[in-house]
Amino acid sequence: MDCKTATLVYQAENPIAQIRSLFPEAWKFLETQAWAFVQHQADAFDTAVKGLVGATPFQFRVTHRDDTDQLTQDIAELLGDITSRLLLEQHFSQVVGQKIYFSTVCCSGHITTDHELSLAEVLPIQKAAVQLQ
Image (cartoon, rainbow, N blue to C red; front, side):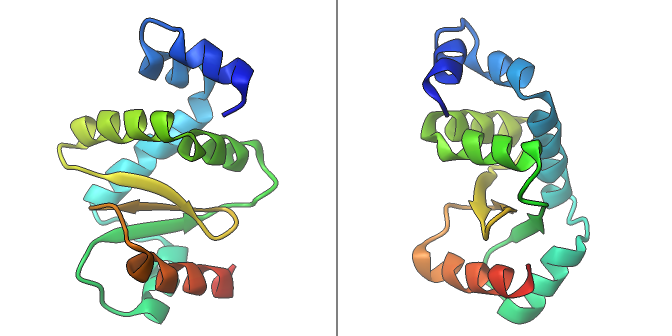
């Protein structure tokens, strides 16, 4: 997150409300992804990645976006800042009633998981995502 935006977010009384205000499209996207994950909603890219990766002992859902749009940049900015990522994970975990984790994968992919992934867990997903994008 750039310094100007970080200042607006972290000097606010309620940083999560400030994130929602500054990034409304990204907020809606993450909310949609959180619900889609817990409701096991199908996504074509996710299905294709899972077809290449095979069965895993954990849950994940991965989507892919056009890497030139503002939403992709905002998601990368929010999830690339550890504090905003943790705030968003905490908030949306409470909303959906289950612990969820957000991250980016591939060039413009978004992944939601049921736990923090290790390198061994995420590397096959990353390889499949770049193969398909």
